[in-house]
Image (cartoon, helix red, strand yellow):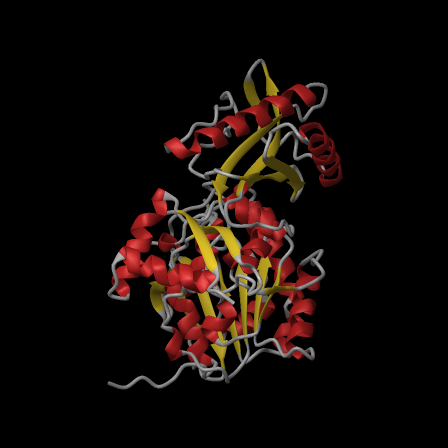
Length: 467
């Protein structure tokens, strides 16, 4: 049989060229040599019986890996639970207390007395972290090295199949009057109503664009994702969401020449949705956070862990999915469910050694500026913790992705309280998990990207390093 001929066509996003050059430099190769080696790896999947094949191949740089060197991790050791209290951390109110200090937290206090306390900086001092950046940092990924739009994360969280070249935006149903956005959330439209509107919009938009598939998938409450698939799409586009009430929605614009067609499609979708929804309270859509499928190294492979995520909100399920974690098949309805699911996963037949638990209510109360609600959210979680306290993992980490102070009604740059408990933490110094006690804790103030190294060390999952 004569040698087979394979023709390869390469499409490279110009924005990725610096990352490709950096990868080539790390291996001591020229860009073209690195590209040839990458293409040969991808071409190995071509069926042997194909005499001539033309492959549209997207050349990607290496996935972004956690900052902890892979060779430091070992595959045996103890179990780890990472409990993320979203938006935990505050500044004192007029009475001189924070919600953590005002809350009655017997279970957190019980953990704190045996734990080491400290604080984390999600990105850098003075920099306010978003939810995705804050969680990636806690999982050990440098959030500044990862280009991820919120849209793809939410899409992964509700099971949307994302392929290379797809573009996804995050969206809200909104209320617009006389061209001005008067409610970005359309009165926090109920989820079942939003799902019905998404179904209707999909039928309306079907076949509207030649060569482009569109899908609108509801995520939570009034939120959804707009998923685009087709040739020559680019996430280098601007938001239509003005970010606050009292302003008009913005037109989507291209940030790069190759994104002009994508921006045009987004504007047509927004206009078609507004025309279709004009009789509803939710009479417009607002879009933001365009991006493509995240390119992250596997959390499990990097750390040598069998990890599972227990979360309800799509964003946090999506972060876990982007890292390659297994998602707990049932979504917890409250903190009690989440903790019970986590304990079950630790003891189950699959022997999960790492459980990520996400708790949202603390962040919601902070954004609402409701001190009492944040206290109540903390107390609700604390009451749910008893099974985990009674049957603890080898290492329990309690942390936050960012603070959401009640007084600020939004994310802030303040350090985030951190607590690590294991048989190797000395304890005895601390009485409570609060901002002030964490500020005085023995761990000091560390980068959030170092939390996984500490957890792995306490679980005896890191090798001894010698020169």
